[in-house]
Image (tube, rainbow, N blue to C red; front, side, top):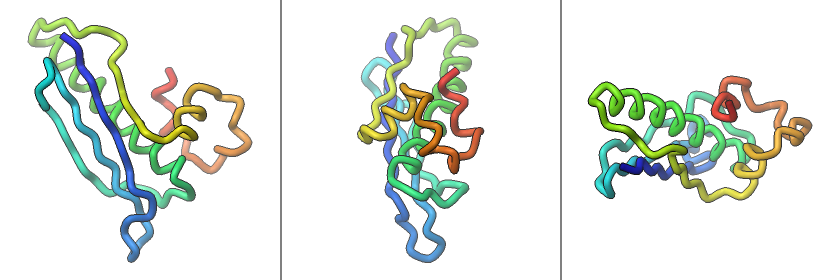
Length: 114
């Protein structure tokens, strides 16, 4: 009963407005159950920020999916595994001391630390 997620982003993928695209895929019992590709609401200043925002979007979806599964009386193994491929974004999430380099990232994208 494991819920796994993969998230990724392309930095500055749209050359018109310079916004990145986030994507995620959720698998439950090794079958895909939810996926999305969506343009980010803000312009990311780095690949780290773009990946960080994608992780935030995936975390929101993970919370929603976990609540839906609970309503169906399906218990999910915690913690939910979320795979991302950017070392800087992983370090930023693990180490809140890096705020000097991340002041430009909106506060709403830091909520998944909680």
